[in-house]
Every structure is written in C-alpha cells, then in structure tokens.
Amino acid sequence: MSTNGYLTDRLTPDNTGILLVDHQTGLILGVQDHDQNQVRRNAQALARTAKVFGLPVVATTSAPQGPNGPLLPELVAELPEGTPIIHRSGEVDAFEDPAFEAAVSAMNRPNLVIAGVITDVCLMFASLSALGLGYKVHSVLDASGTTNKLARETSLLRLQHAGATLNSTVGVISELLRDWKSPGGRGTADVFSSLAMPFYGAVTASHAAASNAG
Image (tube, rainbow, N blue to C red; front, side, top):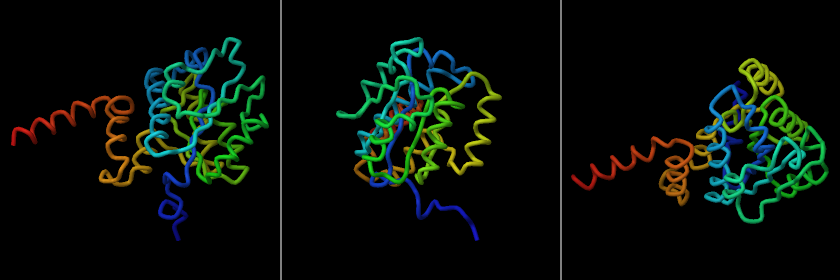
C-alpha cells in the first residue's frame, strides 16, 4: 500500500500556514547554490500567496541588528497585514524561541510551508523541529538557499529522511489553488506572472491577444 498522503493531506487554504525564516539582507548574500534573485522573488511569492488565499504567516529574523541584516524590505512589503515578525536574539533553531513557537501554534494549522535562508540551518532546523512537534512540513527549496550545492544536497537528504515533503514555490501555490476557476485563480495568475514565473505574464498576454483577435 502506498504511503503517499497527498489525497488526504494536500495543502488547502484551511489547513496551511507559512513560515518565512531569516530572509535577511545579509544572509541572502550567502546564497550561492542558485539564483539569489529567484530566492527573493519566491519568498515574496509565498507572502503574496498568503494574501490570495487568506493563509496565516509567521516571519522571523536572527540578530537583525548584526551582519545578518534586517528582513528583506521587499518581503516585508508583501506580508499580510498583522503578520508577526519574531526577532530572535540568538536562537539558531527558530522553534527554540518561545515567541516564535507560540506564534506558530496560534496559527492552528497542521500543514506548514517553510522557507529559509540558509537551507542547511534556518530551513533545516525549523523543518526538523516542526516535524518533531507533529506538523506536516513542506520545505520550499527554491525560496531557500545556501552557500554551495553540496550543502544543499546533504540538506535534501536529511529533510527527506526526517519526513519533510520537498516542494517548490510553484508546486505549493498550485496545490493551494487546485482549480483555476476558484476565487484564487486571478490572484495566483498575478503571483506567477510577477514573481514566481515571470515568463507567465508573456504567455497570458499572448493568449489574451489571440483570444481577442479570434
């Protein structure tokens, strides 16, 4: 029998919360395993998606007054109104900050979509702790990043072994959407075309032009 829980545990607007861990102006400069700008856009895309579907979000920083820097300003601009931003003073694992754990618990969502910089620390430890606390975790790899590809590969192995679902930004958004005819369809198209898949804007424009010409 398959252990695939997709049909029973799939992400929905009612069962999902988003955690954005340490997307900070200094830390983002260490992302070398893939495009830094893509990580920025995808983190923004997750935040904007939360507004499209009414998902709760918790964001956090680590020692933002130091070299890690503050939360990315473009990400702050996308966060839903009232999003708690937990500024940790030194805890490496975000869940070891009582304020962060309390904010996550207050969301009352069994599925957590987690992204973080860097992958093998901020994303890793938050994902492992969430799993240990009984949450189902989707670790979003392209809204996270680390210093080299080997660190990324070892992180993937550890996350998978622990039971996390490895996912992408577009994968998460599409699972939440489920049907383009739903109320979230228009907002999702905006997230795709402006942030997660910039080429999608050209595709939709071409389709609209062809439809109007016909």
